[in-house]
Amino acid sequence: MGRETLEKLDAIRRGELSAVENVQQALELIKKQDKQVKAFIELNPHALAEAEAIDRKLKRGERVGKLAGLAIGVKSNINVTGLRATCASRTLENYVSTYDAEAIRRVRDAGGVIVGMNNMDEFACGSSGETSAFSPTDNPAAPGHIPGGSSSGGAAAVAAGMCDLCLASDTGGSIRNPASHCGVVGIRPTQGLVPGHGLIELAVSFDQIGPLAPDVYGAALMLETIAGHNPNECTTLDLSSVNYLDKLNIKIESIRVGTSPKFSELTDPAIIKVIDGAVEKLRDLGAEIVEVELPHLEKGLSAYYVIMSAEFFSATRKFDGRKYGRRIEEVCGDEVLRRIKCGEYISRKEQLGKYYQRALQVRTLLRREFEEALDRVDVIVGPTVPKLPHELGTKLSPAEMRAYDYLTSPISLAGTCAGVIKAGDVDGIPVGLQVQGKVLGEGTVLRVMHALEAVK
Image (cartoon, rainbow, N blue to C red; front, side, top):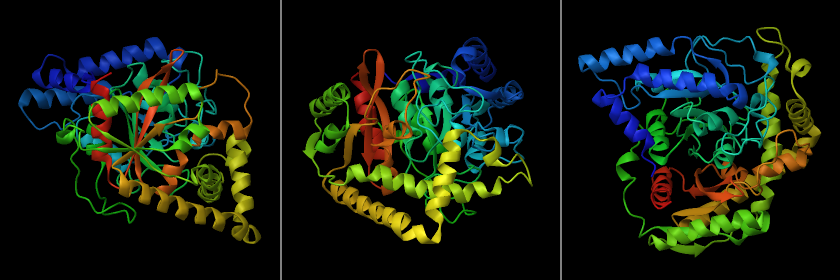
């Protein structure tokens, strides 16, 4: 189980599958499936030419990098030279990127071939994949249901086999939520591990670029590729490189796995049953299961939305229609406008102490609680989302929609890392286990996920 990415890479390196053939297969699948799935906003017209360049290097025996010939999708809020970074919004529908984000530069250096820009919730504002200005995205793993958001297109593309790997972004759960709903692997890195240069921000203190993949090996491979210090950014951590792949097969017999009763209080019992089954598998593999306390977990969602809205309001002031694009308030959807207006209100001088400062206090509280819990254990595991994905087109209130972020937003507040892997399903709908780690604990998170993947 979980060898899809490695086997494809080996086939490309041995010459059994060319980069051109691999990318062509991806493009044909997109052509065949994407009218229904709507995972892409735009395709890269140069993808086959870029794949040909990889094949020429392989034939000459030149260095091609660890992603050589793989088909990569990119969320439409990450800049890729010559392609549109629309944020799935009419505001930026004609904005063509003039540069590569730092993560994209690293993917290209590693031989990855970008096949296109993935659909998403508009400006990453959404938890369902339905707020895109271009079209909602379907869920290939549970057709007719939401794929989750905001990285809806990337998760759907991986689930449908239209990409080998995808680059996405996670602010309050935007990689983890769709990874769970679509039954794929997703990683939210430690805050600052991956350079944010070239990402069109939602909330700068939360945003993180990370991978979506069909297996843990693929997620680890992509994270190794994009992680590490960028000297041009003051917010990246001072790490020259990371190594996860060599540690994936280390047994987890010595691992202490934390669980919290809070998860059951906030989550659908059918989901908890699947999660409990995954925890028992970890126990059978030799992990020690330890109960930890997260007494203020439920306060995270409201604190996250206060801080995020204030930061989003600030970030959108550049979309005034004078330099490029159209004025955001004139063309955006309801959820984007709602967050702008909320952020504007919170940012008023007379409201800062009432809302923003108190939300920051909750952030500090949750960071301390996770630190204390993770002093006792190596990882904390639990559900990723508290409820099953609704059917596309179902009308939900803003509060009901935001409830999808109940279990992912606290990790964003804490600034630590988390990964998601399929734990099972309920009525044919995937359910993801969220493995939450320490600051720079991605290696341990990936080990636990890989161990669970191997016994499915």
